[in-house]
Each structure stands twice: as structure tokens, then as C-alpha cells.
Length: 176
View 1: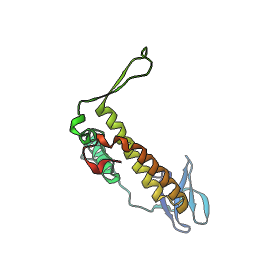
View 2 (view 1 turned 120 degrees about the vertical axis):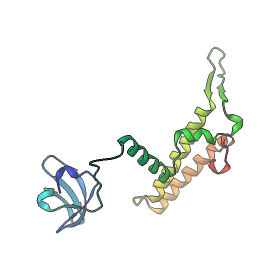
View 3 (view 1 turned 90 degrees about the horizontal axis):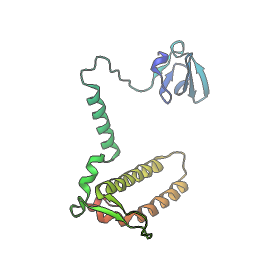
View 4 (view 1 turned 135 degrees about the vertical axis):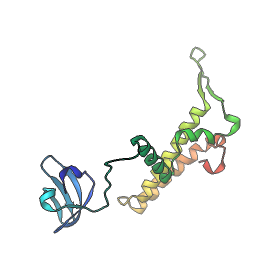
């Protein structure tokens, strides 16, 4: 395997040491972490092979922008995230084209107006990021069950604090 084909975090297989993970790539070689320890290797001489199927994009018959767009759309769908432009469609109809107006107590200070679509988008992004955080906590192998439970309690309290904004959502299942 050529050095240029390796990247940090890549799973590889060595003929003697078995499966490993690339931990560093330099101009002269690589360091791979195996079950029996970390070893510096010359990937071509060591006979490293990828542990996972690899893709090559030479002679691409599809514009790169389309490939990237399709990949991003697939990832967004797989993670259950919402696209920024779709978030506004979840806003309850009575709030569309509305404004959030903040009046400071001090009359010498200016009033601040924010488009509700813009504000709602920020709320949806908070919700989406909390969901991703929750998935990462639940999937973490580094956290104990007790630690996961503690973190889940924090998330539950955050969701509870954000329920005030449920009035903005069109669909009940999209709420906090």
C-alpha cells in the first residue's frame, strides 16, 4: 500500500500483526496501533492493506459539485438532521413573516427586531445539535452507564428549558 493512500484513523491489516489503526502519517512512513502496541512502518514494505473497501474517483462522470451534494444530502438524512432551508417550513403558519421584538428596560437603548424565521432556525439548530450530542453520548464506549445517565439528565433539563419554544413548531413531533 502506498503512503499517499493512508490517512490518520484508517483501519489497516498487517500480515503479521493483524488489524490496526493508522495513528500518524509522515513523509517517510506511518505509525500503526495494533493490539500488541504502536509500531512505525513503511507501508509498502510492510504489506499493509486497507481493512475496509476503498473508493477511487478517477474518471468521474458526474460533476464534483453533484457528487458532494448527494453525499451531504445522504449524510444529513442518515444523521436525522434537518437542512437549513427546510427548518422554516416547520414554523407554524401563524408565525411566518413575524418578528421577535426585544424592548430594553432603558428607554435610551434601541429596540431589537429579529425575523421569526431566523430565530426559529437557531432554535431548530439547537435542537438538532442536542439530538446529535445525545446520540454520541449514548454510543460512547468511553463513558460508563452511570456517566451516560448523568449526561442524559443534563440533556433532559436542557430540553425542558427549551419547551417554551414549542409554540413556534408546526408539528408536535418536531418539538422539544
